[in-house]
Length: 144
Image (cartoon, rainbow, N blue to C red; front, side, top):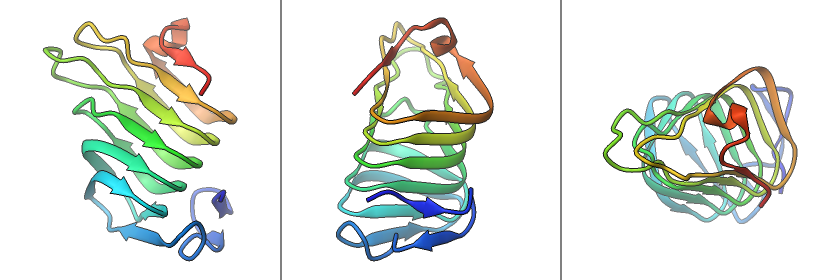
């Protein structure tokens, strides 16, 4: 099920009940593990371990993964900012996969630690104001 919004704010249709249920993470929350339905983050959120969302993900703020964890979203991902910019170069960045559309205002995705991580997008990739990182040079981009 796709997320229907009026941009990056109000949910228009059915996220909380569609796709097998949904979860809401408060602002400045942390996420890891597996979520069986759609997921809404009410502000900035940080990935603290491998993450799989078996639905769509709406982040009303920044989506941070500075630990380099693998992230798989089986639906769409809408976020104001996406920051996969790992500080610790002793271990590689992991893959970031979105099977649906990836929509953001700004995104950073940087390789580190001898990484061969890929950004995989199955649908449309839409960025409103900026895109930074090694993928600007065509490295690490693949279809799902």
